[in-house]
Structures are given as structure tokens and as C-alpha cells.
Amino acid sequence: RDVIMLAGDDSFDLAWRVGAPFGGLGVLFAAAFFAYHVYFSYVAPGRFRRDMSFRNRHKYFYSKYRDDMFFWTTTSMCQNLALILIMTLARTLQASQFLIATVVLVIEVLYLLALSVVQPYKIKANSHLDISLAVLTVGLVFAYLSRAAGSAMRPGDE
Image (cartoon, rainbow, N blue to C red; front, side):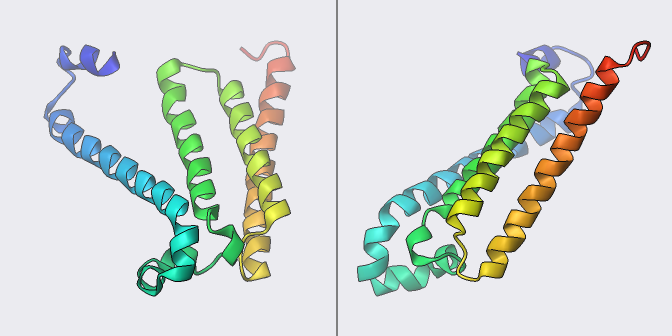
């Protein structure tokens, strides 16, 4: 709807007309990359153990994770995709910042819990670093929510 409205508007200048196809190609590339990795995570457990050429070709995908955690890259990609979609759609849907931050907080807490329980990395220090970064992100979102809730309660701040 917004793109159609902008197409008839004079502010839809040359930069947007030139940049839109590249943006569309970027979205298609990201979708194809994501679909490939989801498919790869589906077929990899069986092929990784029996096919040495498959293992050598796709070693980058598994090198940092434990053997039983072959799916963790896809889990991480899904978490990042959810955050990107929320941030992108929030502006389009004109959702409140408090609602957006709450949804982001829920996603980050779920990821933190899964990461803490599973600890998917071969090297424990990598798991601890990722957990620390997730805790930092949750803390920052929680601080934002606390500040937003506090400013909403103060009278006269309009």
C-alpha cells in the first residue's frame, strides 16, 4: 500500500526508482539463502555422517557446533529473521514502541533460555559469550521498557 501511494507521489524520486529493484533482489537473495540453510539443516544429519564430500563441502556450517546441534544455525537465523520482521513491520503497522519492545524482549528471552539449556557450541567459552550477549540484549530491552513505562506514568510528560 505504501509503495503504491509513493509511486504516484512526486517525492518518489529517481533514487527510489533505481534502488527498489536492488532492494527486491536483496530480499530474494536473503530468502533463497535462508531456504537453502533450512533445507540443508533438514538433509544434513543423514548425509553428514555417510558422505565425506558433503561433510567437506559444508563444514563451515557445522564447524563451531556440537555434532548433535546441527540445527542451531537455523535456530539463530530464525531468531534474527523474527527480529528483523518485527522491526520492519512495526513501522508499517504503526505499532507502539512499547509493544515492539515487549515482543523483542519475549523473543530474546526465549532465545536466551534455549541457548542456556542447549549450549550448542563445541567450545564452552563460545556458548558463554553468546549467552552473555543475549543477557546484555535482554537487559537493554528491559531497561528501555522500564524507562518507557516510567515516563508514561509521570504526569505532565506529553
